[in-house]
Image (cartoon, rainbow, N blue to C red; front, side, top):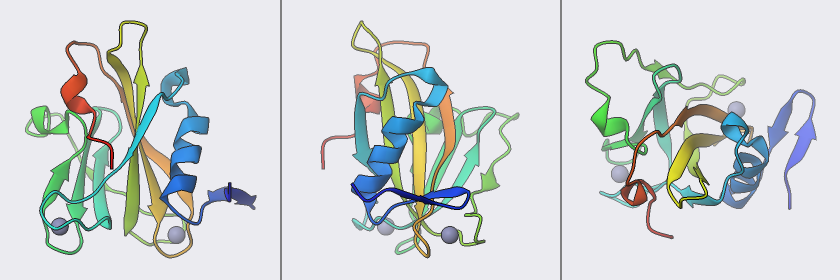
Length: 148
Ligand SMILES: [Zn+2]
Ligand SMILES: [Zn+2]
């Protein structure tokens, strides 16, 4: 594992490191059972500019290659809500291009209970969980992306 901490920030060399970080972050205090790297369904790229509303639990990844907008988890269901106020994610270095890993906490009933969105800066590899939110309904199997 090549996750390292220098100064105030965790850094990783690749998306495997980002997945390790998302698991260790334990968003919402829940163990992360599954992680999936995010790739653009239109062109296969994995570099995104990401908009989130961490209060409402909405995130949309904008593919930097083809411009497709990729809702994260159940975000497509909520993006039109009037109280959603998306903000652009920026690394502490100021960069706004990332690769992304989604973490899924899964309850005893097998349903997704919490989602978290980890991002890795394409410039310096700084890792962060930029949004996470509770999932309080079922079924949820459709939320989990197919394995890469
Ligand atoms: Zn694309
Ligand atoms: Zn950065």
